[in-house]
Length: 183
Image 1 (tube, helix red, strand yellow):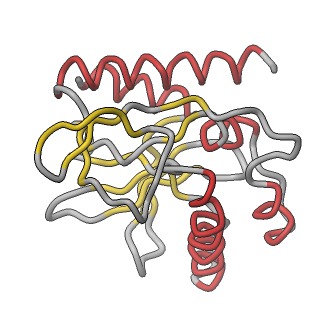
Image 2 (cartoon, helix red, strand yellow; image 1 turned 30 degrees about the vertical axis):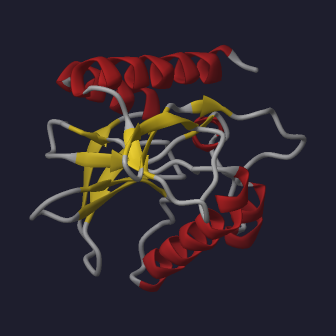
């Protein structure tokens, strides 16, 4: 694994640790229909503790199907991001408002995640925007989608149905470091 991908994984791991320290233990509604290796012990009636869990390396790149469908290479940073941890969305403060990172909850969720990514990128093409798979959503009154631009790996904020994009960080790792600093 190249040093840049290792750095991104270490940054993501640091973000999870810092978030749990700042926000308290992660809990989720106990739903037997959505099993995950992230699930831990009982947190209370109908709730479970959970932790982000490292995914097992897989022989193929996690987003290979998306890259093939878009006929566009997927940056190694995005492959590392989606192929590193299983996690429930964690609502985090950021310089751009409250947001939730979008990672797979389990291996069984991969097909749905890839379908959503493909639909998102095809919608962008319909608006004559270059494809940028999502990595997070902005929470609250100011909806927005945080995506990674495939051309240069920059992280951008976009709004559904609009052609406007705001560059938030030159790279995924720089974006994650800004989230760590906001905690």
